[in-house]
Image (tube, one colour):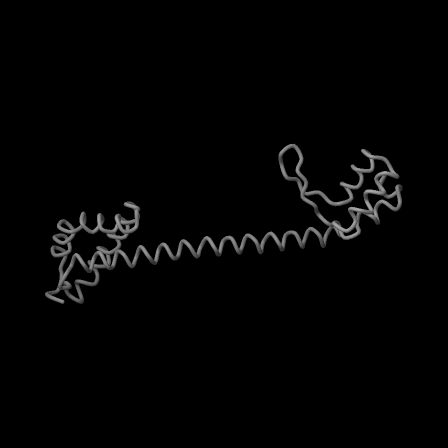
Length: 165
């Protein structure tokens, strides 16, 4: 470290090295906006540090290294944030599904209707199929489908009166 840096030293280094630092980092990271932000943050840190610690032997190298570390830290934070958001969304979806099942006591099934996914309970599916295909034929098919819906269809099809409710 050399002499203590004042505002004029930081300004001089900024005018001389800003373009070079941005171009080096833009080439390294492939994003000029990210490089500019990193270099600006590095100069902000330099204005504080150099006043107390002095100007480093290679101010341009210090700026580029500090900016590179800032950019890497930022990219890591953003990558882990996306993972945390995905995990939180998955957890929230599970909790929401469990609440719906606990309240209704029925199994919810996603169904494609007019190009959109709609979640309905299994009894609504049973009613629709019974109306469309008739009692005996539907009851036979329900026995085959019962395994997929944990036996709910078979129980519902045993009594046609329950379907009419």
